[in-house]
Length: 493
Length: 64
Image (cartoon, rainbow over all chains, first blue to last red; front, side, top):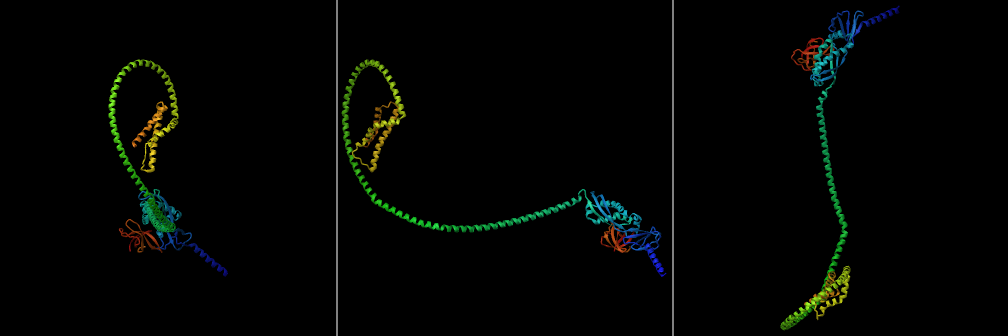
């Protein structure tokens, strides 16, 4: 029994709990309960009764099942993505992708407005808002320039409120944020916007780099120059020291030979002095032994010759006077005799002329006849002789020197004799220049003979070419050629 | 709502709709704001008093 009672109590409690569970509904923080049906007369400020439904947020409430219905309206944040083609204030076409973040307003008016419009279409809310907001965004972009759109967020939100605020209030929605996510710029306006600055920055960067590079290069080159200078200094010093070392070494190397040469030079100087002294001594000796006696002898001979000459001159002058007187007497005598002879001859000649004229006339005719005969005979013999002469001339031309030599050999004794003849007349010959004088005289005589010889050779060769060179003729010419030497002998005498 | 003090988050100016943040219902909510004196410009950050309320989200403010 007790157990039954306990069971009934428990059952009642469980029933009451389940009934309570069925009737008590709680609104979550992010949602609103829309209760319609039995009118709730509670008139608190936190609930709004309009159009006969009750809105409950953030707490629980009793709902009578079957009489009242409860709907839940989410107050969560929502977003709608927008992608539109639009034109800016400057007329530049842009593709704008944005997102609008919105929620149902937290006040009862907004919840009521939204509940009436979207309660059964909460899933389509985003699409509706997208459609509404596309138009608004296009209008917003149309009032902005590209630069403002990029930089001026304040203006974007301000325009968003201005253009869409009222409309959103109608829907019970509250726009928390409008974000432009992406701007598609088919004309390249935005790219070009940054280009001058980018170019300026790039140029500044290049300038800075170039100047830094230049400065670095300058420093490097200065350092190089300093290094080169230092190297030069060091090399100059090294070279200087090397030169000193070389000089000292060379001097040391030359010291030995130099001292040798100096010593040798001393020896040579002394030897030269000795040779000079010896030469002086020899000269003195020759002066004493040769020159003085020779001078004395020459003086003696000159004196003797002078005396001889004077005596002979006096003798010759005496003879000349004798001869002159004799010749004058003889001339007178001859002149007289000649005059007598001339008279005698003239008479005799005139007598004989007459006789000769007569005889000549007779003889002339005889001679002419004889001459004609002889002429014929001569012509014949002449032709024969001419032939023989030509043959001989040819032979001469071929071997002239042999022929001349032969002729000279035949006549040589006569030539030499003729050349020696001048000396035959000299009684005593004094030569002032000693033995050389004798040889000079002989050479002169012989050269005269030789001159005659050469002349004879020329004449012979000329004669052999021009006319018949008979042996008699050549002898006669040689004698004539010797004649000048006779004349010379007479002059000397 | 009336008499509450809020903070301007977007400047209220002639021809411009401003925004004020007001603490209500245990949180803070943003309302579209107009100046009580229509020629007045109220920069952002200024404390304002709500003098009129037009549900659901519009208020008229004047500088505090």
